[in-house]
Length: 238
Image (cartoon, rainbow, N blue to C red):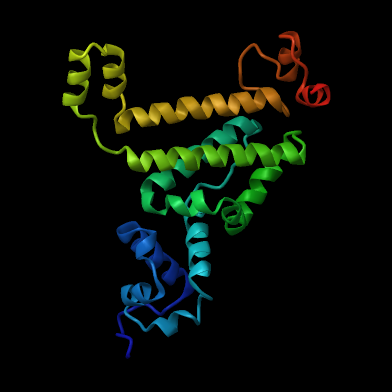
């Protein structure tokens, strides 16, 4: 099969971009070597000069998606930096909803695929004074939250049906009707930021590093004042 003169040469980045476009259109079940070759206008065997197999393609697509997130830019406040990264991660997930299962089904593999970004994030947390084990738990907690919220995002992009809330009010459920009315795509943004802030502030209370974003609180010291010990003390006493 002769390659038209105006067609870009086959390369790994081009294959991965075509794979992502195919996933965006057909979902993960629509991705196969044969379908991808058809997308690129080439023979299936031609792809193997640039990718090993389908698993390699999925890993490359994951890395491509993570590469769309703005790099971590240390500001001196790890909670702000992590919040900004999470917002960027969700934006990528919203732009490619059919690719979300790549992260939901392959959590550890995703860290390996995005190794440079993950290493930078862990380094940022450790440089803020957070011990390595705690830094890993913080990173995993925030990443899981974004992925989990994105799974729900992709299933709730329709506007609420006014007839549903009207029916609930007629049946005597005004509070539930108000909840249904507020459950549209726009409210999802506020809900995401509310929950993300609560998660990161809670993590900052438990592992404050160089500081905590919650006004008037002092990380583990506040827990002690409230009658609880520090995380390590809780483990020792349990």
